[in-house]
Amino acid sequence: MAQKLTLISHKLCPYVQRAVIALNEKGVPFERVDIDLANKPDWFLKISPLGKVPVLVVTGDDGKEIALFESNVICEYIEETQAGAKLHPQDALQRAQHRAWMEFGSTILSELWGLETTGDPAVFESKRQAVAAKFARVEEALGKGPFFAGEHFSLVDAVFAPVFRYFDVFDELTDLSVFADTPKVRAWREELAKRPSVRTAVGADYPQLLHAFLVRHDAHMLKLAA
Image (tube, rainbow, N blue to C red; front, side, top):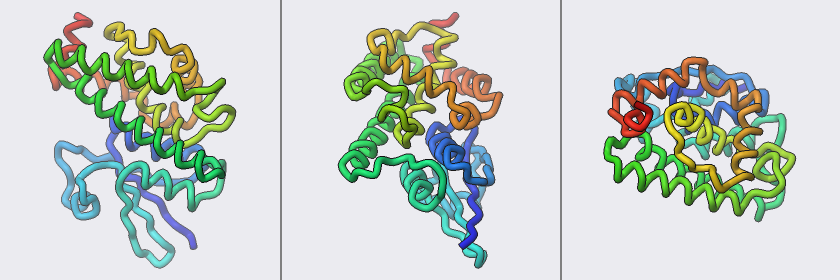
């Protein structure tokens, strides 16, 4: 069955980037539709029960549309239904481990939200330490690289690449020292930044948009850069 894939997204959303990276790694054609999350269209709210992106609209050759929500669910669907490179291990136990680390990546994103939006110095430092501690755990899980599971790019890499992208902007503002004691994480970050699927997951205006986001939140990070 021929399917049309439409990814409803937002230009800054790291969860959207996961799906974009997975689709790019598979070489799957798709349409991307960016929306304004501050002014969500009615049609979007009808298909997104949580009111969040990404949403993947799958249109069959019969014209019927099915909307999938939650980034990891979307990535799993892409992996299970699309041809191209395999992004999950074949072994069930290893696959479960990968899924667990994908969830761990989401917990880092939750801490980053507090780090980038707070104007409170104490909260900022607490979140900075929390993020550093989580990456210390990631350091323990990494092998020789260059990717999370070694030679093969996986969905865990697709999850962490958008996390690292934040720091491309943060590093221009201040030294957070998050990766000071994690050499394997630093090498992984550098390798992912080279990946075409990662580079093209956002537009050229991403740094400017993220900086504007920090300004809107009167972020403490900007005060450190002053």
